[in-house]
Each structure stands twice: as structure tokens, then as C-alpha cells.
Amino acid sequence: MLKRWQFWLGAVISAFFLVFALRGLHLQDLWETFKTANYWWLIPGVAVYFLAVWARVWRWHYLLRNIKTIPLKEMWPPVVIGYMGNNIYPFRIGEILRAYVLKRNQSVSISASLATILVERIFDGLVMLIFVLVALPTVPSLPLWLKQIVILASLAFAGALLFLTFWAIKPELAQKFFKVILSYAPQKIQQPALSIVDNFTAGLGSLRSFKDVMMVFFTSITIWLLETVKYWFVMHAFPFTVSFFALMLMNGVVNLATTLPSAPGYIGTFDGPGIEVLKVFGVAPAVAAGYTLVLHAALWLPITLLGFYYMAKESLSWQELSQAAEEK
Image (cartoon, rainbow, N blue to C red; front, side, top):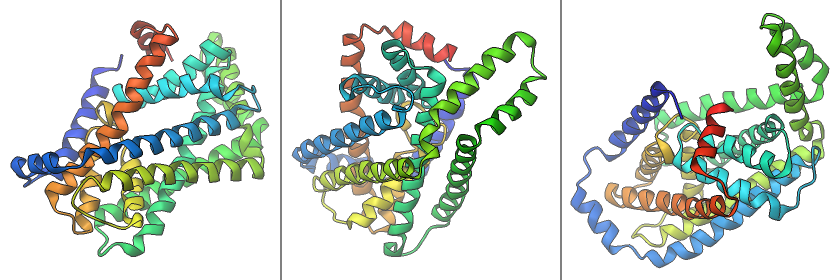
């Protein structure tokens, strides 16, 4: 599905984060942490997580309504399959699969869907930055790497939002810009490419309304607060306690880190920063590692299994999904 260099790039980045976070850790101590954990706390954590997934479904429904009004129950399978795809394929291929399944079921242009998904990702990134900034006063000492993540991510997400907002508000200028760029391309691809640009512009429609922007923003905050509640529930399975603000910081940092290329399932890019954040708050390395690895598994496994179920229900084959990702 992916070029070999892409696979190895993700694998190297994942390995770097894992080695960095697990350095000096004794496996026996980690095993003791796993053995003594109270896994019953995962049940309410998973339940809250699926509330967050439902909120994501509603947010996507809201973003797409300028293109087509789709019942929420019809949008649930594409979202779940998409998150399953993100968990088993690298480079967030699941976002493409989500758009593909929606086109297959509802005839919505893939480029328009991807525009709304990009808007989602930008708002998610901005909320993660807010979480980090709100929690920073509670940090005993701010590591240099955390400062660098905050600065770089702030520039990236703010710049992307400004660019897309300008594109949405001034679509005619964007079209002129792309016409100039595409005039250097072969004649046979110019019109199809301009059609993709038009569909993508339609997907940015929600950015033209301040009310819509605020609705998406507050929905995004709700989604990530619910996910932080899952972090809080899972924390009770382990022998440590940190504030909810500390978990907000962890949530923000690990999800900013997972925007980097990695092995499938965000291996390393989730675990490494999460363990390091907990260490900053005085959590023992073995406990921090055990908690982060179990939390990662509890985030990964339920939505992935549900995605497999909906793949079967939608009569989707692995070959079809792989081909869709490769082509798009």
C-alpha cells in the first residue's frame, strides 16, 4: 500500500520514541505494574470513549451538511471504519478510507469529505494546544522538548486554519491560484484537478460562518474532554494519582505527537511522550509506562474491533480498502 520509504520512516520514528521513553526501565517492574492493575476501570473508560466517538460523528455530520444532510446512523460506520484504518495503517490512511466509504454509501465527493476531515484535524490540533496551555501552570518544570512541540504545533495549526479560512472566504481567488498552477500541468489533468479543487472548496463551507466555526470548536473541546475522562478512569486502575489538568496535558502532548509519521497504531509516538509527561509529574517510570501502554491498548482495541465488524457488515474487503487507499 505504501512506498517502502514511508513505511521505514514511520518505523524509525516509532522506534526512536519507544527507546527514548523506555530507557533504563526494568521489564520486571513493568510486569509487576501490569499484574497489579485493576482492569475493571477500563469498562467506564471505554464507554466514555465511545461517547466521544459519537460526538465525532455528529461533528462530521455538521461539517458535511452544506454538501449533503446525512443521518447520524448512516455516518457512524464510515467514522468507525476510518478510525480502525488509522489504527492498522500508517500515515492516517483511515481518513482516506472514511471518505471512500462515505462516497460508496452516500455519493459524497472524496475531495469534499477530505476537506471536512482536514478541518476536523485542525480544530483537534488547536484544542490540543489549548489543553497544553491550560495545564502548563501545573507542570513542576517544563522540559525543552515540550516547549518545542508547543511552539511548532502552534505555528502549524494556526497557519493551516488561517490558510483554509481564507480559501473558504475567497474561493474565487483560490480557484485563480490553482488555475495558474495547473496551467503548467498536462492538459488532460487540468479539468479533473480543477473539479477536485471545487469539491474541496465546497467541503470548507463551514469556515465561512462564525457560528459554524464556534459550533465545531466547542464540539471539538467536548470530544477531547470526554477522551481525557477516559484517561482519568484508566488512571484509577494504577497506583498513582495526578490532577485532571495533568491528564489534559498528557492528552494534548500525545495527540500532537501522533501527527508525526509512525508505525501503524501510533506505536511510539503515543507511548513515548505520554510516559515522559507522567514522569514530569513524579510518576514512577514503570507505573507511567504500564498506564500509558494499557491506555493505548484501550484506545486502540475497541474501535478497531468495531471497525472490523462494520467492514463485514458493509461487505468491504481488505483488497477494496487497500486499493482505495492506494488510488486516492
